[in-house]
Length: 465
RNA sequence: GUAGGAAUUGCCAAGUGGUAAGGCUACAGAUUGCAAAUCUGUCAUCGUGGGUUCGAUUCCCUCUUCCUACUCCA
Image 1: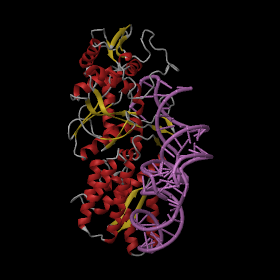
Image 2 (image 1 turned 90 degrees about the vertical axis):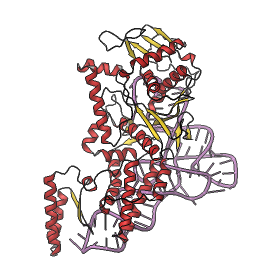
Image 3 (image 1 turned 45 degrees about the horizontal axis):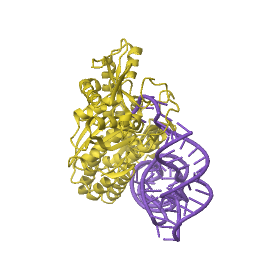
Image 4 (image 1 turned 30 degrees about the vertical axis):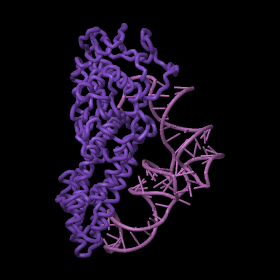
């Protein structure tokens, strides 16, 4: 497995801390609002990584946190009058359900910041003892000047007078780069007792503390892979790496992976631009697997420009896989075709080269159809195809639906009956060579948004779109 | 402003120092009563201008355009 490492800015061979094991930590969402397409893309990228590593035989421990205490959540409390717990549990629940709809498995461990307060406090205490922390009027800060390797992740220049567009920070900070590890609470805000005063943890410290608590190995590196969105490189991951290195004398992660952004019409999604695209809205219109396939179809590091036209083109590609699945009419498998499997895994093991992997899938579909055209009764072939598709279900989580149901998404049972009645009538008309009538029925079906196809296995129908 | 990243056919999107995967669309053919589905075939010289090289889309420099970070953010 080759992975692109943000630190070295190149692909590197994946060498785990412990043989055949992979420890992965991914920054999850701050749960103050519904998940948008960007959250989906990030979750999808690392879900793919996890699946590929598993297929490679690694025993994967996958951790994804929920940031459940934060300024934005507090703002939401004030705005909505709801309690912290109400807000947080609502959005966590939604997040997990929506991600499951995309075929994303829950993480093995899903730590929350509020469940790790003592670990966070201990972590800060230790840093304070080692001389990396100082306390001012509004919180406990990390002194970045004490860390000679600060900026080693993001590659920023240390001497850069990076105060160009600085929002006025706390003037008591020793250096603008310094960041809060513990923030003292104001009147009416949720707070936790600490040696420094009541307050809440800073954003960066929670990840460091939770990694230490749930994943860390001894030795040079605590974990194998740390992932998240590209916007987290600085300052979030820089600060995490810095804290962990100073607290433990270990490096946090050997490989840092960052996914690209989802853009809408070429622009970053953001609330201020008013172009946020919530996953829940997308899921109302499109099936989760169709969205998964689309969002997964370009490389995880590239930016992704979301639009409906491309989504429909992408769906057509997935349709072909499902037509093949429908065509073989069996759930019995034999063994995955070796060349297919090898080509697919070679592509995915090259820093998750999904484009190449999907080209391999396309080729499998086309050649399977071609052979089936010639040998429609070849059972062994059908079993192999079924196994190939099962492998895709496992590694890419595509092709998982019932092939008939896939083409009937959004059709009610009543409509289904009606459609099938019409098809029977048409077949009768066809049998008596009354083509005028059969074509009229076909037009009627088309008007209903149904496309029919006469195959050797009988007349099939699909919902158009 | 500073720092990263990107520019590939009508659209999406891989990739490589030796003349560019795959998908969608389009066109032609096979198949079909006609369609649809399926199969077969056709369709690019890689943003601009230089340089290095026997040879560059691929390496270096200029320019242009776009994205991101520096401010909460996947």
